Image (cartoon, rainbow, N blue to C red; front, side, top):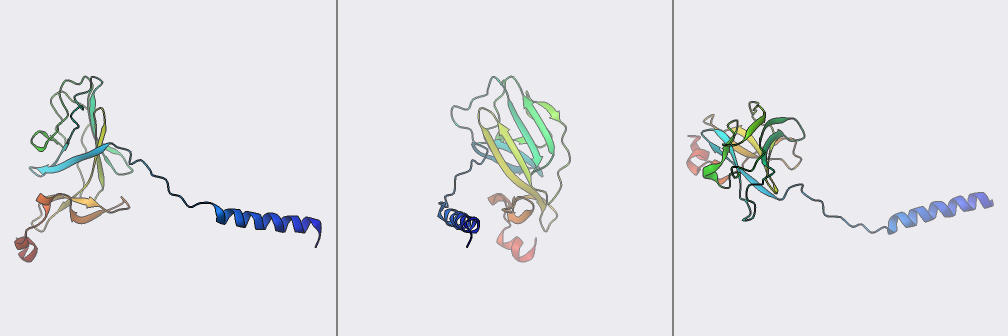
Length: 175
């Protein structure tokens, strides 16, 4: 065997051996937000809030709420740039889609939400809170919230919240 061919063979073999000897570690990836936001239906409209940390008071640099299609366009954006009013921290104070909150300014007018589309809602104060949701209709043609599929490209029939789960009567008789 010629010296050139022998060197190629040794190099090829070493690449194979080295390739198989690399450790197969997985590295943790950041989820891109600090906590979970919440979305519930109020009067058939998604309503957003976040369970804020005790030190997450209104930021003097402002707060924002952005709703967007997963991997897509922003469908609503409100911003409060002076920290005058606290971001909603419970369901009773939630921000209804399209309405805003007292000192917020609309930066992107709300677009009607579509059924079966995965949406993200980001609430940003000093921290970022995120909710993932889809809008669906039940057997009585009423809106309810569902979860995303793990690929984030489509929606599941699984209710997002306990309140959206049908009762045994509804599952049996559809009423």
